[in-house]
Image 1 (tube, rainbow, N blue to C red):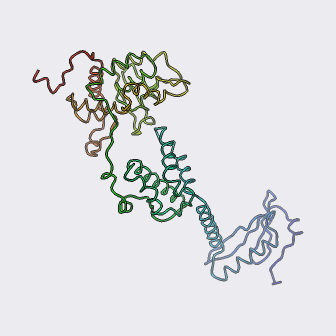
Image 2 (cartoon, rainbow, N blue to C red; image 1 turned 135 degrees about the vertical axis):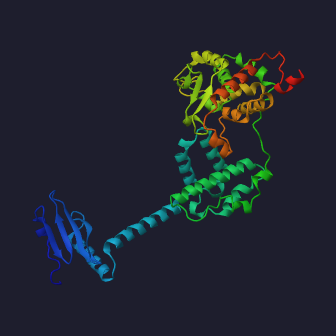
Image 3 (spheres, helix red, strand yellow; image 1 turned 90 degrees about the vertical axis):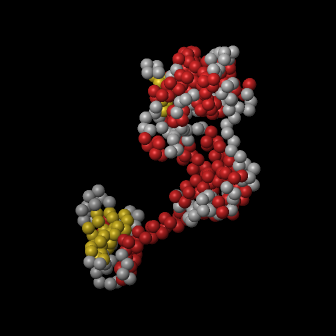
Length: 414
């Protein structure tokens, strides 16, 4: 045994008193704290600086083990290596190896389900989670769902997409975007490395045809604006919750979810405004809708149905009326049309039958202006102009179907 080394014994350690620091020699010490706990540490100098490396508690690290750790520290110093820095590097490498091991067992399907779970709180449309899951289950999971996410390459992504790229281009485009998002998510969490094989620009655009060239743009089937007054007056007679909800949506030209989810708390009858919070808007921006006399009539008729604050509650009253319930009313007479299409009907009417500026019509639909310069200057929501527009729309809808409707652009010849 070298002189000045291994000075302690277990008996001496047991008899130690609080506040003492016992020296075993060679830089190894045992600190006895006031609480009675005993901790090992190794004291040394490195590059002219005094350093202190903790080795663990005496309750878990025996005297022999502590001496072995101290000896390892001395060997590292002899090689010009800082023991503390070496320990940190080892922990970092161990963590990296653990992540690599986890990544190898992390399948694309597991990553996809985690991503959907984390992101669903951001989706304003309840259908998004279902659509994401269904599309991936149909087209991605069968090809590489059970493979480690690190192994997903361009060939696998193309295999999943090529079968539907020209026949279901819209669906294929969305599947590609979803795969890309999940792979980016996996890379952020260190489950994979390298470029994203589902990236379009500068990658998949080299092997797949441009979606704009192979797909036919399909618009939401919409009712011609010349037909909607008669249709509106027919459903306005329905004093059912579904009929009132559909009437409310047509009058306000809002999206289905926004109209169906309306609450009495959002209605400001004093100022004739319906205030929709940003959380309920697709654009994630608060939106105000002016109330017309016809809208107020619908609200009055819906008052008896009130449950849990919803203007148009569902059967249980715990949630608003479902999209299916409202859509079924339209399907009775117009099976090929969509409820969303009434927004297109409104926009066509604005363009063909009124002199209201384009930006007013777009603002009424809660559309964000694509022209950034134009959007920068338009900071207000054009409420006064939109109120006049919605009043005109309301009057147009309530004109009796047997009366003569004269388009504004033809008045000159009248």
